[in-house]
Image (cartoon, rainbow over all chains, first blue to last red; front, side):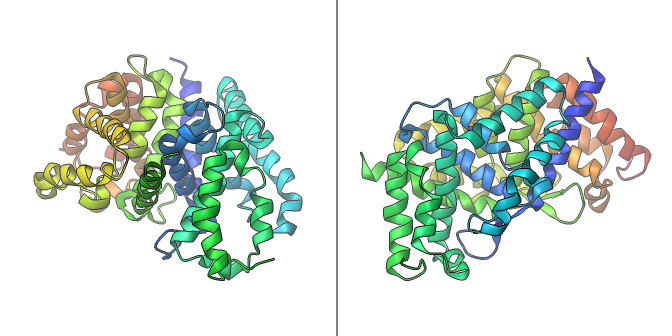
Length: 198
Length: 198
């Protein structure tokens, strides 16, 4: 056994623990606190197991889940950039590229390359798996925001056109899930005023 | 599209959110707080992606990850039973069976059966995937406990023989990972006194 290899792998696994301290802007369904990146990734992976039948094109579920489990690790160094933080989004790409270099670089070269390729695939959003992963990344917080009475939206004063812009590619992964999200999570919160009309 | 089906699936996905509120006895690596079931499941899924090459027998990674993502959901109703809580462990099986009935029963019948079968497979611990999942379930907290200076062990006054009993099947999934865990996580904490000698 290659003892350098296994040490590098465990160093990466341990470093991943920090994902649990990266806060997001989404409240849990009970509204008591906001979730973190690790919880978010886990929830999307579970949802992919249950909802993959609704992908527009057939997807490789392991590939999609692998992407989702690790796509936010760059935030260990780069921090979470809120979907509607236009200022933060300007430097986001640069910060995340440096983070990807360092974090995936903890792994042995073959795995570093493989995991980095999955991140690049998610970012490029061109394959059926990446498109579906992006659908999950938008639908999971919408489901929780709606369950928590829309307060993540109302606290930030989010407008419907911002949500529609954010979700402009959500239907590319799954039209059915985007329609479900719009009808069950977004529109009721426009009606109730938690999401501002344009 | 079957609208009952998709509603059942989303009801299950939303119910899963409660996993984030089920506390465990393992501290994060920085020792600041203990982790929850969702974070634990995510971490083991990531570790399976990175460490599956060390399984004693070849494993189906998606099947193993699927098992790990959902094997603790019964704790939403049954609560977490600490590995060394001998009293709690007496009623654990009964509580968890009732929980499995209710929680997997939220899903459409075909998926309820599939997910329940994965839980039964994990519990029976006979397939290569279930054995490896069990290895992850023991090695991930050992890694974190060691990183946090062993305080989860010392606070509970855990003895080495309890840890060895708990880990009696860990090598069945991966001898290499069990040896790594023993040498790097457990033995140093016996030497330093965080784990009591027998």
